[in-house]
Length: 139
Image (cartoon, rainbow, N blue to C red):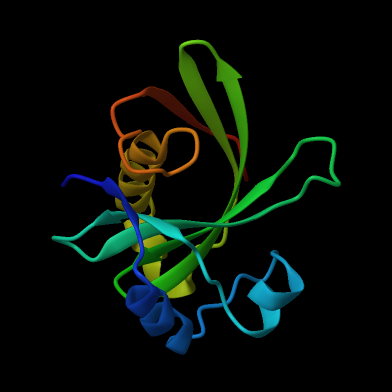
């Protein structure tokens, strides 16, 4: 599987908006109307993707909100980014696994790690090859 960062076209954004995928921890719009990302980190072969939704600048840790889409299941993910040149480190602090996917937890973590490695700093196209470390720090 190969995740790539892709800028969405206006048509792709409209299609995504129609799905009304909600992020329960994001901005007011994310929780009521649905997410509207400009970029996706996507594996087109499996239709698995990661979308940045919101950044909590009001917290000490600058928690960032993501939706990880797996088999048409939106999975809310919270992470904290730290940059130690030349490496980016993402600490996953929360994943809300759907009950039906708990048996796939290890596989999902592998996919999520691959997605964050491609996302790198900001999910912009061309950033996929940076040095990225992903650690898990949730219960």
